[in-house]
Length: 312
Image (tube, rainbow, N blue to C red; front, side, top):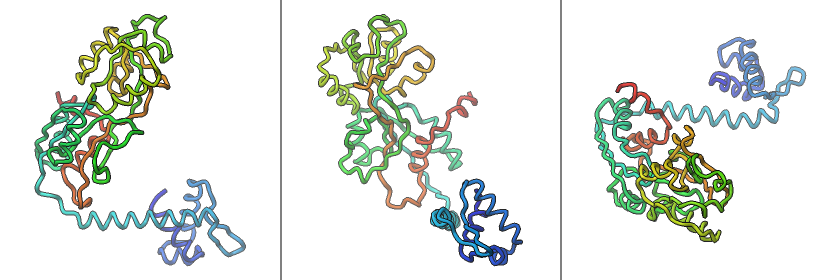
């Protein structure tokens, strides 16, 4: 589907005559017919009903006309916005806070892409902290962006959620994770396996810890806490060594799961949908490009860090 085809469709829909549409567009009548045929073939619908020599919009045509007008309006708005765009001269530094499980040390990754966008070096400083602290840092203006995991069906931790922009970085699911070396007779797809091993959990101050604990309490499981820490490397080593089983978002240990070093079980009772999100305060002028807006899109884009690795 091309803009030319959409514009041709709208002109034909306005005149309900292929010959008059061709004159309006300064092309031949066969060219108009070809554009419409190609559009109908791609959409797999008839946009016009042809009765004798008269042409009428079909039901699908009426629906597509609304969509086509919206597309053209958006294109015109984009042209207007870009024609009035003035590149910013001042690029502010960024301060980014990360919570449990969020990728740390993003300075080099972000600096690489920000430099490619703004053609200048932009200082990026990151710090790690508990989610409640990060919320306070963002609300007070001490941080530009914060990233942490949260359960999808829990309330926002921010006092005024409407003032906060939320961009998903990684969608995940909590799984029961364990080493392939665990005793097979005790490692089963049953929530009761949590009573067979020490249980590793997110730190008490993380937003995903409380829902897990509440679920375990409601199930009446007799679990033994193994380790609860914000140090992902400590948890990783404990899981790989077979010390116990853990309940964590699968994306934190994605590499280990994909390589087979860890096995992840989706057990309904303790498997929750969660998201790693990047949060920032809304800015009054959304059309004014800032380093923070660009950084948010970079973090949420899923772009590979391979360009950085290739330069090593």
